[in-house]
Image 1: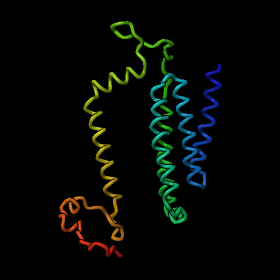
Image 2: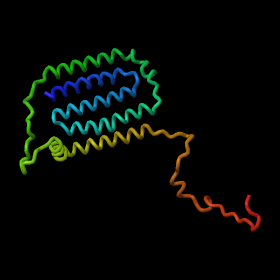
Image 3: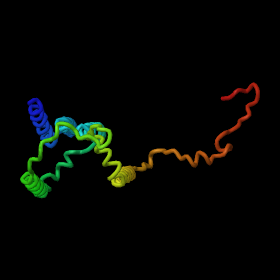
Length: 204
């Protein structure tokens, strides 16, 4: 009974925050509502016993992705009025894509069937009789059967990160930059000037 009430509470808050993400006029408010939506999704994962997915959602999406979005939106001077100027022009295309997505959701929901009830106790390992939790099961599969796919996904993300850095790197002509090779190639005569000052004259 308590789990059912919690499910409906988290679902209502999730739907309200998701609607606020796309309807809020301030982009900072949209990111904050997105963080609220992520927390409620994590709570729903906890209700079904998927604690690993809930923690990953909070750590990765809330702690990294959403906070990064928030800092980018707050630090960049983006002209959102100019971005919204082409809204009417692209409205037919957006409406068509929305209808296609809605049709796909209807097909998926229409073919959905209720599965067997979740077991109350987690299955046991073949050796030792230790309970097989979600985290251990995912780790066993991820680092054994899908190890190469996992490494390939990490490599793809690394290449994407390097590409993003290269694309956003800008060299400004009015900014002085450090040249390590030029500094190391300097001689003593170019760096130090020895001046002999006569005694008693001092220096001006």
